[in-house]
Amino acid sequence: MIRTLRGPIALGCWVALAGTSLSCSTLVDVDDYAFEESPCGPRPPACDPGGEERVYAIQWVDIPRLDAEGRRDGFDLDGTEDSICNARDFVAPDGRRGIDQQMAGLLEVLENASGRNTRVDSSAAAARGEDVGLIVVSGIDDDANDPCVEVTQRSAYLPEGTTAESLDRDDDDVLDEGVTFDYGTARERDPVACIVDGQLYARFPPTTRVSPVGGGEVTAYRGRMRMGIEGDGAQSGLFGGSLHVDELPMIDETALRVLRQAADLEPSARGVSDCQGISFALLMEVVPARLGALRPTP
Image (tube, rainbow, N blue to C red; front, side, top):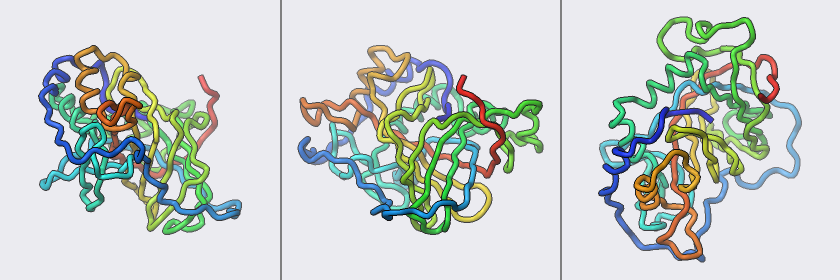
């Protein structure tokens, strides 16, 4: 979807995580392990065709930071506050409990060790036209509450004859609003998304491509997205899901051991102490954009 940290994972960063303490509460039985229900509720038997289409470009992404009370934003992917594989769930700043967000702390260690800042780096990259993702929301009849919208994610390209300077005319290293992008074929699509109380909710199949740890793209399972949709201008949101530890690229055995210790989703048949998936979510800000021409898949 969008790159956030570039370059291979540094061994020293992962070694530093080896002593990370994972608190444990009551373990949930594998037989009761179930993922959260969709916030969209029942889909109407028929949705009216038409409606407004809105296009957004991802302006920056960031790691959800701990606030002063130790709260961190994310998704409740497993539908429980109980520990899966001994991993502690978080409480979101708005009070939602059971937040699965194990990757954020690891990404902060990587960020600190590299001396880089995820939000600053991703904002500057988007302003240069690099790795820009588009979110297209169609079928909007009511931006406060609408059970019948569709969400499509696409890659963005500079239109022929334009330069990156046209994306950031005020030279503030932030992608401008209203920029026209050529677009690729649909990467991800949720035909049964919804808007509830001004928030857009979408879910995606296990083919979403993200690069939250650098070194190549990986598949995000149980993809989730939540984003503001009411009104004009920039909107904030969150996307996340589960990454399968053994599928992460450029990771040595020491790093794998640390990641397996932090894994908190997808328990195997061997029990709740053996998980394959690690939860992640990233904050994002999007700005209104326009669609140009469709580009064929490279």
